Image 1 (spheres, rainbow, N blue to C red):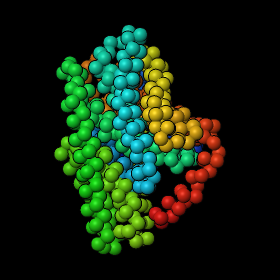
Image 2: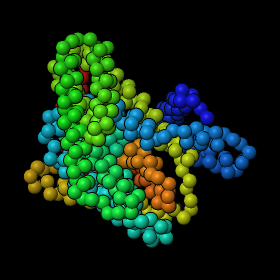
Image 3: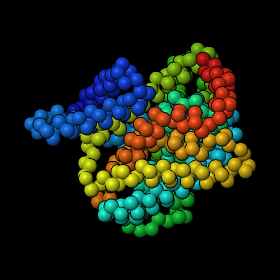
Image 4: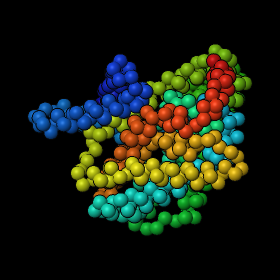
Length: 432
């Protein structure tokens, strides 16, 4: 049993080593490369343990990885920092302009995806002879319904997407977690109690968590903004931003509000009003540099952990058909969850040509889905859901993440892609 310090030290050493190997040998995008190497090492160790039972290295590493509670690590540790770092670079003007689209995708799209994914997995499990109650299948739907903001923002860095479409994808990912986590909580409680979920109770909980989280983030972000404006000391202002993230997330959890939405709203305020009117050039450089570094390090750790979790995943052959069938199911559901709201809203505000295929392929799942799946209680439904979730996450991060640029090049007109460059540079120059 490793101490907490030893465990963190081992993970950082592995992350740095694998990041170096990826940079020197594979040349993949940093986070995808870490995930691929983590999965490859996990599979190699599993094969080694099967061929040479006397070797204990696989057992030692498996025991170490089993010590990491990925749900706690992601949901109460990394998530707040990563969301804030991503929200800092969101343009509030673009966000305001795309608010109806982002709101529809983050609410209606997430709910529709939950229902369709749950029903699809239930039917697939029935065809494969795997016992999976319908209420537990809906829990799976809530687990994979949200696009992961961490994985999505990392993927968008390597794709040249028109500004409005990029904002739609990033905004949906930043705000749909609050909806999905409420759905997951309600559906998990009803599945565990073997009772139908209360629609009014769920709607009230969603309104409280999402609306309360947004209000809390707005209030805390404004207070932090005023505090930063009252001085010019980059070390204190970095400290204020760090305190804002941890304080607002902890308070939101205590008040049963959406911590993810709260830190996103606070991050947008600091990244726009705070950067423009409350920070000097030197302070902006330190604040944004600090959060860029935090984002890169935590992203690297998270993607490596996702890859190494294969060591503790007890895959059984009878789940093979579910593993094969769940990926096309997820893509089909994502297509419907995007195309319906986009088609309806296109009458009022035109979308960039190619929006539906790009948003379908850019709907990457990641650590949040894996963390929610690992938090499920023991039972016959846990393993099928965990395997299905893992397959969706691996495919979306590796395959969709590596090929999103090609989809954009093929489906989005060149003139639309060329329009993003000037304003992007203007936006970046305000941060330097």
